[in-house]
Each structure stands twice: as structure tokens, then as C-alpha cells.
Length: 238
Image (cartoon, rainbow, N blue to C red; front, top):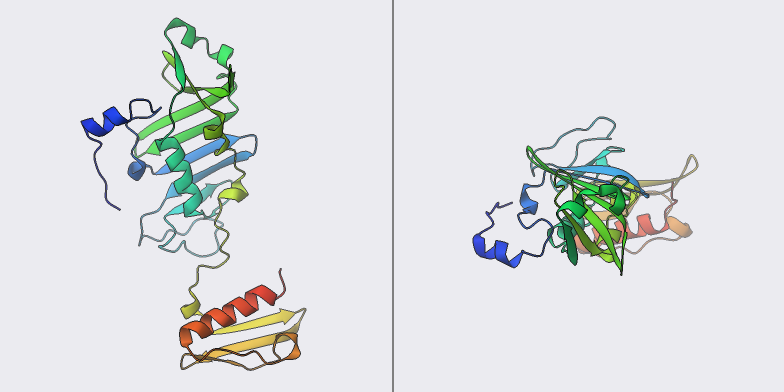
């Protein structure tokens, strides 16, 4: 990915944002904790596979983000990108400044309902979300800044209320259809169906699903899609 520096004009356009200097391309780790659970994801550079302890196999290059807590797994990149967008565009509705802002307990920031910790290399930023504010908002503070407390919309914070299972990549295998050479489906210990690909074409070498032959298109690409779709859609679920 290409890194960029936030210019003066762009900063002025971000004046109402909670983190006007936030650069999503520099985020290396994101940790979120809420009533739904806690999780942490880390960025992995494309082409630099890293085998995590407890993870079956290496994370493939297409997974830019991996979960490292509470379990090791590939993270859903669209979910992580969505969280980063929510951080980037998080805007204040109003704020409390000076002496009143230092009374953290008054705003529920001493016992936050949501915490978001963002690591950008050696730099870290921690957002804490407290009580409901008058109107439809929540109090939000930045750890280490005792001079201001923000009010942000509830809708903004709801996106961080995710369980770890909501963040993991739901793709079971890091495989492309073109990489699959054979598929065997079992029912108990018995083979229910077996398909093999030779010369770009699939053929059934064991009983077909449902007891009847499966029609496979002549196009190699269409054949891949048909066999993968048929076997994953009607095969037994573990």
C-alpha cells in the first residue's frame, strides 16, 4: 500500500474529527474491548506470511489483517477496514473542556463501556467511551488528555460492539477454485462423492451427490465454480 502525509488543507477539513491526524495506512494493531468481548488484530505485510501459534497453516498474502487475540485466525479485511473508517471519520458533536473535563468518573470514563486502542508503530492512541450524554450521544475521552471530553453519536460507537467471532474471516480455507485438484465428500466413513480434475475438466469418480450424475460445464472456469458450489452447498456440514 502507499503511505501518504496528511497536509494542512486536509487537516483543516478534519477539524471536527476526534483524531484529525489519524492515518489508517500507518495502523499496525487495533484492539477493541466492549461488553461483546475483546479482540486484537495486527497488520501483516502482503507477501510476508507469518505462522501464528495455534493457527493451522500460514496466513496467506491476501490476508492483510490477522487476529492475534483471543485466538489466532485470519481477520475479515472488510470488517477491519470498516472499523478503521469509523475511527477516521469519528466526529465530535460537542465537547467539554478545562476543569470540568478532568472529572473522568462523572462521564463514566473511569469504567469505560468501550475501549479502542490503536497502534501506529511505536505511537499508541487509546479511546475510552463512557456514559450516555444528554441527547443521543456518548462521552468519549482520549487517554492521556485530561483537558477535553467529547460527545460522539451512539451510532458511531455501536460499530465497535463486536464479538471476536464477528471479526474473524469466515472463509474456511485460503484456496482459489483453480487450485483445487480433487474433492471427496464423506458421510460418516463412507465416500458419498468424489470429483477429480484432469486437463482442466472435472469428472466424478465415485457416487454422485443425491445418487444421480452431476452435469458439469465444459468451460474449465465454469466447471470449477459448478463443482465447488455443488459440493459446498449440498455436502454435509461439520
